[in-house]
Structure formats: C-alpha cells, structure tokens
Image (tube, rainbow, N blue to C red; front, side):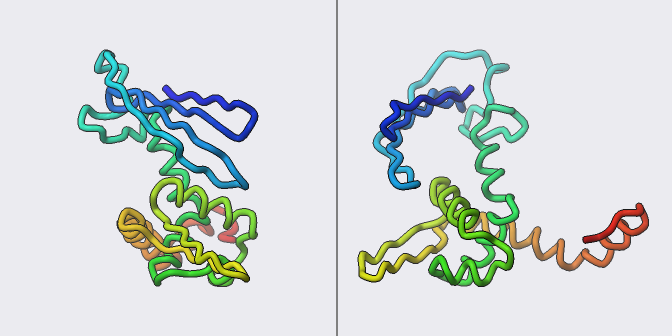
Length: 175
C-alpha cells in the first residue's frame, strides 16, 4: 500500500507499507531534485497475507504495491541500463554520458539520473565551480546493480543473431 500528498509548495509526504513497517518519507522538491527531509518507519500489525514483502524486509516484485517495482522500472528502463553500463567505466559528466549513449534526449537522461540517484545507485557530485562542474558515479549499490544489468546487456548483444532470426521467422521486422 503506497500513498503520497503534497502541500503545493514543493514538499511531499510519501508512505509505503512494506515488510511489516509503515515507511514514511518527507521530501522537499526543489528545481527538479528531491531532498529527503526525514524518513521514519513504524511497526504495524498485519496479516501475513497482507505483506508485500518478506518478513526480513526483502521486496516482492510480484506484489503490485511493493516499492521494489519502481526500482525495477528505473534500473531496467532502456536509459537506466545504459547509464549504469556507462558509469561502470568511471565517473562521467552529464555531456559525456549523453555522448556515449546514442539517442538519449537531455530530458530523459536528466530524469534517469535523478531516478537512479534517488534509488541510491548514482552519486551526483557538484564541484561548486563556475562554470558548473558536476560528475556522476556509481555508489557501491549501483556497482552491484550495474554488474547485473551489464550481464543482461552482454547476453542480448551475443544472442542478437538468434533473436533476429526468431523475429524474422515470426514475420516481424527486427528493427
């Protein structure tokens, strides 16, 4: 069960029932970025059948309301996978990431970086200089996730001739 409310001034309150706890985050939105103000959790009584995660706090991707679904969406989106792969090579500035990933718009890259930063996968480092100098790198959690999606990406690239043949056999254009 998830819910959220805002005050119209850029502040939001987000609550999620997960792993037997009610997790609440107060978030301030400023210039397209989210800043965590406070995060709390409270044990709640519930039937085991109501749980959207295991008792050990593990998420349950198959449960519609589990917050792990949002993380899955961010990590496995087309741009999320490619950003993680690029950042495995080391810290990059925004423009360098955009040059390495063909076809990504500035807007989609900015949104993807914000999602991944919000999920704890990407670290945004602002050097506080003029002109602005900002670098993005993977956190330890992001390194783990990047390794997993890189394996999937490698498999796709290696299996592409077979995938293409299967698509042609079914009468679909491989493009």
